Length: 484
Image (cartoon, rainbow, N blue to C red; front, side, top):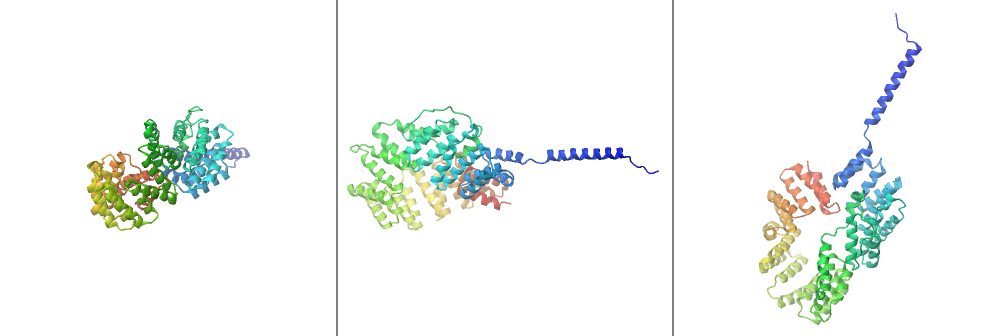
């Protein structure tokens, strides 16, 4: 007898099936990957400085989440890809961001514009951070003022820079950002006490890559400030010159006592500073006047020769070096000057010989420095790199065993000369001495040449992360594309 279900049993069956489907659908929703989980995982990569891997993680999410598009723009900015960074950041802002994220985008957009030399637009962009209206967004106002101050400082707008740094210190800043603002004010000769309390910003990891690097500057400046008055202005001028703050350097040189023993040196440095600041003709004219006033000054003539080289006045530069050679016979620096002159004429054989002669004339304590200069010449030009450059790099590294530049040059030279295992050794020593992305790249390249693919990949990625806006990142990513 055939079973015929009743209406009740049919209803129960349908209800059971519906419940099962609802539960199954709910479990599918629960188990389905949440893009925000992937975003948080990528954020952890970014916060740990693993920018290369983080970018690959953000890109698939960018079409779904404005926050991921924002992070793509931030990373593009760090990589120096100004147009791509601006496009991604503006796209994220147009899609709709929370107020705090919108201000984070403004901070990075301003930095990307500044690096791209669109300085006025960068300053205008950071100015938008002033209208933050919520505590979550206002955490970026102080760092924005620091970055605006940095931009003004680099442009020689010292009053604008000072105002920006002072206003930054009126904001709750993380300690590292406050230290930058205080140091810059001290550079400007107007140190200020911290006005607002130092805070621990929970978002500081997102903006840490934008923090201006100051290195040992505060300690060096403190030492210079403690020098006797008669030495202080000259020393500070040279310090500012080394930092590229030409207006500050000139102001210090102008304070050197015109009747004191450092007056002549200060005048020469001031002329050189004017030339370095971009006023080639003005700097040349001042150096020429100094040489005319004291024809026996080798320092002024050497700087004048260097200035002539930069404006392609080779004959005039050679004439000055000839005079310096007569004034200081047997000086190693004269041979360095000739090496620069020959290199400018593309006469690499003569330049290499001049570097060898400079090394032979150098005092024992200075031989490492001269060998390093010669090795770097051979590495840059690749002229006689393995026959002459590599031995110079070996001398430099032996004389300067803790010098990261010497060890990196040795690693690069060994790699170029197919000495891969010794190149690995030198690159690791350079890393231990504090070298950057260049040594890490050469370590990866040497490991790859030895067939150690996995550690090579790790080093290339590390090099890309250490200097995301550099040639080393580009070279590392190209090398990664060739690895099996």
